Image (cartoon, rainbow, N blue to C red; front, top):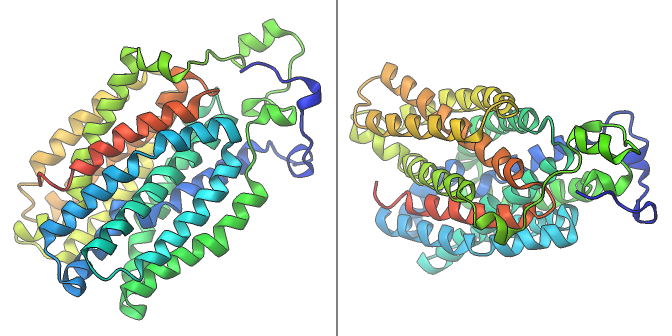
Length: 389
């Protein structure tokens, strides 16, 4: 990214007088943003599926189809969101998306039939899993370059422990107390009243706007030295990126993993009951999934600063194939635990590859546009997941 003119440098007391490199605050906010996508993620939505079927009088097949359509339709807006991130900066976009996602969750408390549920799926998948996840990852990538893998891995660890590990339990606790409708509305209020002000207060655009460098490096007046440290990245436009093999290998590989893992998560309860186990066991297996995802997120993030993303992708695809085979033989607690470990490792590797790969290959300047298209490819894969299973 080119050096900014001195006249364009902004001053922020919060950023420039921070006792620590402000990228750490950005890491925290980006991580919170990804945790806040939970109400639109499959691992949380799956807890509501039985309530949709029972209370709305819908078949499982229809709910699966509506979820697929909602995910597909919702993904098509992401290239537009990505372009807005590049033009307006992640801060403004993140505020707007968080507010809309909160309203979408409140809306989910009022769905009454197939049409309104389908619209709700479009809203929460588009704004939560898609847009809020996109901008949260983008802002972390803007502030970290040389240590990007480690930071994305650390973020993924926290998202796994809090999002995948704790949020389903919180939802399971809230539904018996308040009902599933009020629970979804409460999740929306947390986004609107709790998280939106935090985004407005603490999130900032790329560090160069404040006279800082990624990773907390000191600005170097010598262009040659700056280039040597990696501050002057090679930045690809979206059309240039789409003409590379790396773009399609990364995009289609992530889509394949997303498709298969989404199907396994969406039908988690029915997979276990078909194998003679109960719903409690299915809920319990989220623990090894969450712990393994967290650990692999951190480990693979550190590795991503040292090895090719293609190696992480190959390992993730191998583990995903193994989890599909294991899903047919879940006849006891031991194999169920191992299944959770394998599926969690797959998710951890996929999260790191997606979080690091686009910026590592194509730079930060047009990252929103590129990641917007890449995430659309991933989500199209995820949308197809519930149907074949």
